[in-house]
Length: 147
Length: 147
Length: 81
Length: 81
Image (spheres, rainbow over the protein chains, first blue to last red):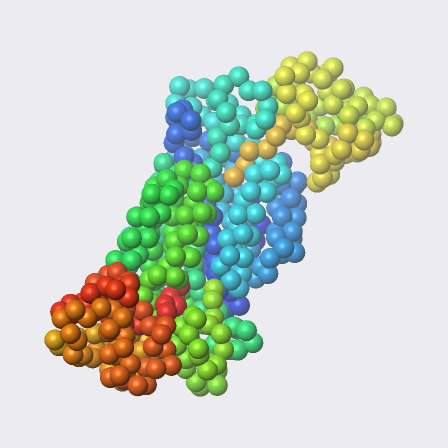
């Protein structure tokens, strides 16, 4: 399942959807809104996307993972819109016959997602300012937050 | 949370229990009963444990993970007794500020669990035979199954 | 020829619009599009060199043709997850 | 001295009992316990060298004293997960 959603992510349903009697291992990754980033305090995040391309890239990543590991099932859900502290921004679930395959595939999916999928987050700092996070650009303020 | 249980593992509750606004990343690992192992067909597994020592070792592993990674919360639940195909035998959940920490800590916990925690599984093969899985011992039949 | 480009995130904020119409030559490449954007919206200058250009669902190389495409997008480095 | 040892998994099945009482010297070590087990239960011979010995919640070295302990356990390599 590849999905962009403005609703809360149901990680339990996503995890159930990848379970299989062919799999001995399931790995779930959740990205959650962290309060502190390099000493600065976040009160909320806003996520925006280029939806058509983002969904296409997510499908490409799943396909690439399947060429590299014996993935039984995989699912990626990314939330968009306004997220509060602790909210789940992204969930990646993958099942494989053996555990190291599932760990490697899951890590690959979230690492590549953060590199190539056109989704952006905007920090809402506790001083009332907001700031798009664009890694590598010459931003006036802090370094980008990362999970 | 460290727990041995004969009941179904509620992985969603375990995952919720490690979420935190201090964490940007949660990793959940599930071990599930796989049907095929090196060409042989499993119909069920029976898990036995030395409970006092198993719980002590799980607590040691969590403590060691906390010395190696900035773990916010961690939980490990292992099921005992009779498990059918697809059932969850073990769940490991860990939250950390950043994702690679959570992946590394989660993988460490399940890898070490399989090495040192006194829990054993008995295969119930589809030919009606049963067989304890004891890695490294000279067993008459197949190699041990692994996740 | 008139070519519409979608903008996202800080690029959209700096341009003040989710899309721009540019006038490009028929042989225009992604590199030409970047130059045309900088001229059209001077406010994009601080991030112009880091902007990514997408043609359809793929990232464009500097030499990728863009003229006449109806599925162009320009945006800063991504930060999902 | 009489020393009770718990058994698990295939060791318990081979011995036909979840615990055994052995007679060990007062200076007996884990290595001595292993030998005594082999003599007491010949059926354990195929896995005797691979059996793990626990004293309390810790794995014993061959030289670890065991006599008089009330928290001894013997079992084959683990396979949880």
